[in-house]
Length: 518
Image 1 (cartoon, rainbow, N blue to C red):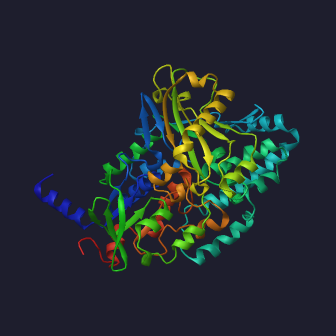
Image 2: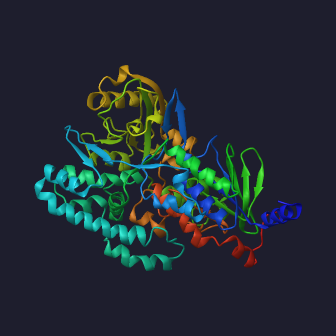
Image 3: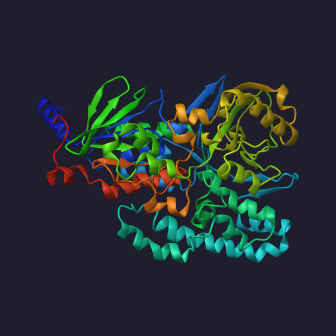
């Protein structure tokens, strides 16, 4: 490149409007990639020392522990990011479809292998309850309808006004979205085991199946249509692939850069102040941080009339999580990649978690064994695991500093008694995450892992909007905004920005004053 072309390139880059993205989770990175491709100059600011947010990676003694999401569905939403850049995701990231998707182990030792093979699923239903065979067909048809009306039609549609809500009401009515998920499932299936197997998926997005809208039966349809996938090398390799894509497009990632405040000038978001005092100017700010935390802690009260302290406090928030990451010096080859280990209670336990905010002595567990599929996740001859227990958020008053180790021991004993014999003699690495970590490390209000619980009146228009209701120039992506939690949800929240943030050229052509340097 000669000196003239180099100067022209520098001048063009200097004319780009600037976007700051708070947080480098899936939603933040996807938003950054999309904005960079649309002409914005993007910098992603990450509090932690590495990207990923909830998808952070811990490495202990040769074990690779993905801290957050491990189930990848709807890979097309990821592939689209590379396609928009004229590239192939497969050149940077390898996904492997799992079979079965996961095993559901009931308290009596029976299990249900949940897969994408419909004939095998039908056989599992008939094995447990032959009279529920027809009901299973009806359930799948209704879940498919919720996928069409809820996911395809409304998922990437931003809800910025009452008009948007009114236009969505016919679809919500057709889905009878006022029913909770368990009611919808129970309308088709009679056996308690099958009701549990077809309703527990809402817990993957932070929702109680006895209270979330039945629209979330679409998760079942998504899994059947697109499969459940594992990212070879771990979920962290997918995050690294997204960072690489962003940087190749000219975007920037800054780690160890915690945002202390969103700055306002002329009634618009004008940049941020970092915890160390540094100020960064921008034309827009996109928060991938927890929405409640963003409004409560990053904006002065005069800039949040809609999301006041009282409104935020009135919300019903998702559960939190207790996660024990551990490695063993032997392999447990009879354990599949994903397993749900259900305890003796279903509804009673969920009531304790979501309604009573009480830490119970019993629990249900999600056991993740990535080394079943991917040898790179553990040293030779070893296994890598994490076990996740849904627990109440911090309104429970649980002293996790005192309770973490006793709770871990109880979980370890349950695993040893059921699916991991001799576990206590084979542990070679161990790490814990509690609701306090969600509050203090990941900056989640009440330590809730998924923001507001996805109830009907806390979804779509009633969830924090992708374009802030309170402050022009502020936008939201991630689990705590529309459409909600889960990897597909946060990727779709980033896609929704395409409808509320103009292309950089249009932004400048409209005469909206750039606040950089103002």
